Amino acid sequence: MLRTKTCGELRKSDLGFSVTLAGWVDSVRDHSGVLFINLRDRYGLTQIVFLQGINDEMFETVRSLHPEDVVQVTGTVQLRPEGIVNKKILTGEIEVNAEKIVVLSRTEIVPFQPSAPELPAEETRLRYRYLDLRRSVMQKTLMLRHRITKVLRDYFDEHYFVEIETPMLGKSTPEGARDYLVPSRVAQGQFYALPQSPQLYKQILMIAGYDRYFQIARCFRDEDLRADRQPEFTQVDLEMSFVDSEDVIEIISGLMLRLMKEILGRELKLPIPRMSYDEAMERFGHDAPDLRFGMELIDLTDWAKEVDFRVFRSVADSGGRIRAINAKGVAAKYSRKDIDGLNNWVIEQFGAKGIAWLKADTQGILTGPIAKNFTATQLQQIAERLHVEADDFLLFSADTFEVTCKVLNGLRRRLAAELKLIDPNEMNFCWVVQFPMFDWDAEEQHWIAIHHPFTAPLESDLPYLTNTDPEALAPQKIRAQAYDLVLNGFEVGGGTIRIHDSQVQSKVFDLLGLSMETAKEQFGFLLNALQFGAPPHGGIALGLDRLVMLFGGLDNIRDCIAFPKTTKAADLMTGAPSPVTAKQLGELAIQVKPDNTKTVTE
Image (tube, rainbow, N blue to C red; front, top):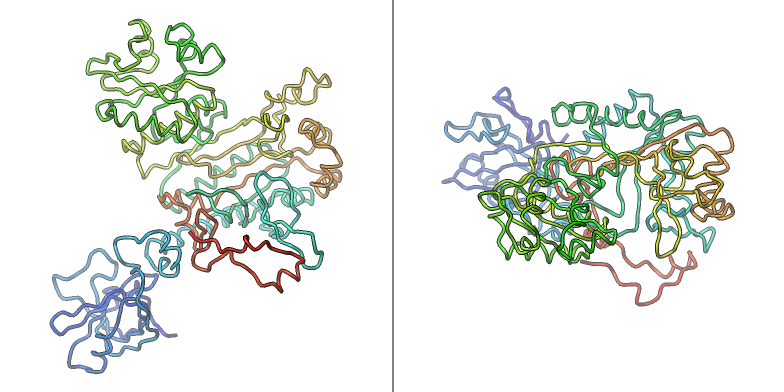
């Protein structure tokens, strides 16, 4: 071994022992002829002292060191002199009096130092990811990821789940996002698809009798990226047989209880609160509501039908919605310029027509540019519905239901961040259940499955699906046996109970306009398997990257992944994606247009 101890291991109990450390030079300091280096590895940092006159050659070697050089040091553990104890680090009471140093590797001039307090631009961090990964924050995050993964593996093992790997090279099936395709050299002109999820394979495993399956699964989706989304990601995938939605919710709630206790040392009160999809959209305008603060959406549509204000009245009469939020006690903080900024933001972000607003003065009386359009009684009715008090700030959206959801959810989250209403240490879970099963695609003029075509409807809603009279069918009323786990306003997991009844499955295909021939072409292997004794089954997938982000108190999913991609799906460190040779393309019988061979960069 090139070391006998790590750089975060030594304590007062090690005084007098000879040790050998190895790591990266964090800093070099010259104090009147006494040289100090801080030596760093992923376990911590140890101060090494070099006394002049003991070994001139060693002293000059230390003088030549630069931060990020790799060295091996042998010496004796001693107490730091009184007054220079560093209480910020675990090794802060001791230092190593060096007797020997070996330079293992010299570094080039680094574009940034991992221990520097200020971060470089993210592009620089990703280009030199090997330096970025030396930062203690990144190391702690990846250790957190390791610990979370270990806890959940232990938990599932205790609950009789079997970890089974599913293929990375599979068949392209419609799953909501674009597939990453892999051309076959053997079967030229044909393609594998990288899995968007193990959905179909895990259902096959249920039919095969493995009644409790889980997998730490790598998944791939070719879609537009953002801070909490990556083209390749990891999900905690599971499936269970002979269960209903309550069983799946119970097992995942127990997992969250375990993670909260073992990772954060905190208790989670069960059962986790739940609400229906409809309730979430009405109260918060989003199916992943952030419950760490108030500012709930209030509907005023019925009231608006009785007022003379044409902007509100016309929207209400035409089937739209008038809804509002109340930002309590902050009216004085928002100037007219600030409000104009909010108005422009919702127009640009959500395609809205804009927002209306009112402020409550110190007496609780509502004022603002639209106040003159209402009678005193109508203003009082607004105040009562929105529980108005002095200095409250009211924001209104008058539009379709969907637009008012987007506008007010966006404003609600933005104002909460600006006003610092969110406790960064709070972990607020909830379940959202009973999602709609279908949505109408106005462009294509047909129904589409919101989740996937194997999602089971609620039994109470089956008549809306199985009615033989076409005019009596009501797809818009059918709710799915679907459930999402939400944490601090992020969906961290989603799942459904699957259809195991062939007649119900056939009805769903008919409703989606999917012929049996097309269904067999896309899902034939699963449809065949379902005919050979399929048990009732269901499951869920948790986003591991997002879980780590939230448990680590971070706001960017790229900080939770060792080697992430940029928002353009580029790996700046390796240069991927990149061109390949003509020989490689020839083996795959593929030709690339000349203007499509550019390397993707930021």
